[in-house]
Image 1 (tube, rainbow, N blue to C red):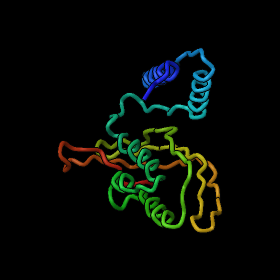
Image 2: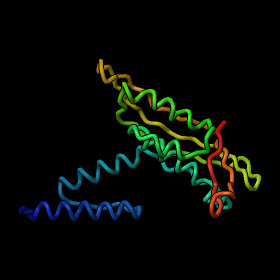
Image 3: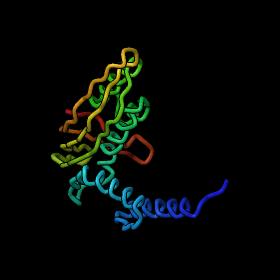
Image 4: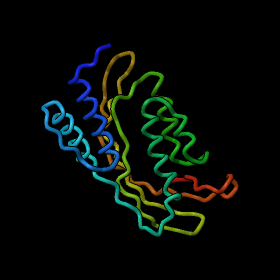
Length: 182
């Protein structure tokens, strides 16, 4: 397989752009193709404002279950519900969405959609139990019926929830776990 010089240059620029994004910097590029790629990526970054960080005195391990849950929501949109079901203690109200999604997937497909944390604020800290007020943004999701091909768009929304996180010392090494929502 012969690789042209232009392909090598484009692959190099894309690799550098990926490294630069990983480090949080922006990359200045000159060619028309590379400028279009950089502009498109810059626009997508601007669409999603950064999360408002929690106070420095909060144990970062205690917010990990919230981050894992939102990541699992994004995976669940693809039809894989395993990570979502494993992201919280059984009986957590936050897992009801897994049941609703399980009912949808046999007859419908979801296209697009993305959940993103917008705010996390500590509202209660009792040592081994913490409550966080969390704002999650959900982008538009298109739901398509597999048989009729009819499409419905679930409009984007901001979801505000109280997440209750508990420390479980019975898990090897101890671990914070998402136990409920209200």
